[in-house]
Image 1 (tube, chains in turn yellow, orange):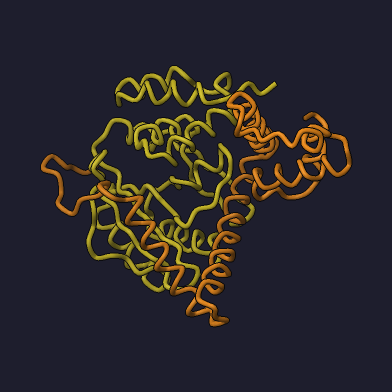
Image 2 (cartoon, rainbow over the protein chains, first blue to last red):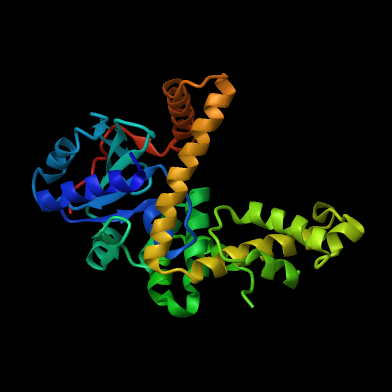
Length: 188
Length: 136
């Protein structure tokens, strides 16, 4: 199975169940930054529909074996369902549940629909600003590189920097933002 | 260096800018349009400023290439790169094991990925729900 085929399964299952979602992780970062390889199909999924996320996990059963143990990330405390594709290559599917967090509300509200020819369908993505804020919030090496890449490719002049700075102030990640900006060489 | 950039920007898919840059440097040396490499054989690692300039040049090229793509094209690259990476990992695993058995190769790739997960996710996840969790 190819990564895009797995992504189609996940998106189709979410749509069939009426679960609101958006792609996050490397797929979202690659859409606005410098594309890089990933093994993950990561979705932020809404929990507005009771039981829908569990139904999504069940629906994906033929393609993805989910760990019965739900985990919580130590940064935002969000719930995460992790699954491994049943075939090869060993891709992963990660479903991050929405939770009571002002930024999560904001980024989900601002999500954008994008047609992806390779998937032959539309899907939902965060805005580039929200990718940057989220990546800076997580702050792992790869996240910081992704944030810098999105800043560099989109260009601060075309981004809503006030929005980004506002959330970075809230999250205490302004230093990371400044470091990311400082890491971008002149493009001329 | 400008000649190098022109050389590198020939049509064609660029999977790994760093590798392409390295190849193009050799290419420039061979066709003498970028003689600095052959003339001096300078190692940029010996000169922090030169190394930074080289790193910036590589990064700039990657950014400018990405800017030339649409969102859809960048997404296509993510999928292509990801599939390609696993093909390379499988080849590497089979080589390491000295086997032509793909299943054995995939088993080894899974083992590698599991180790990477442990490294990348160390300390990031807990199994006990935090006390103040509520659904949005």
